[in-house]
Image (cartoon, rainbow, N blue to C red; front, side):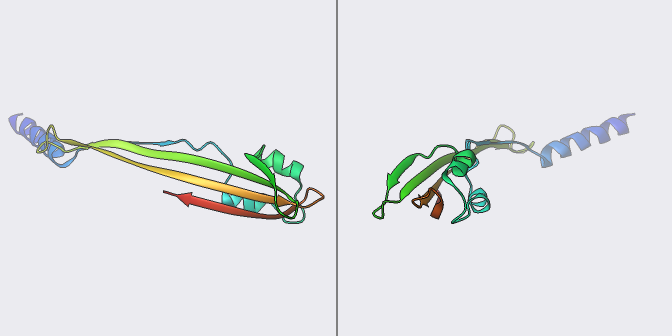
Length: 130
């Protein structure tokens, strides 16, 4: 009986020694369907209309006219993603822990130019991540 208890105690100590606790979580605050893939899939130059764009992406952030008097719509989305957590060592590092975190900000701009008949003439995407 003492041998079984001793072996069990050794197993517990070794498990504690070689494993630590870790907790990680990710918060993604992007709240949009505005992505490069979605844009390329949905927008066809010379085919897609303003009303279809409104149904797909909603109202634009900015509406202007260019020097050719074409209507230009600008969609801009910013997202912030953070990862956080903590690491703590096993038995040898008892009481020691470290915080782990990282953050990424992403910017996505879609600029759509419409012709005089409200059909997509051209569009461009500007995406950045920092």
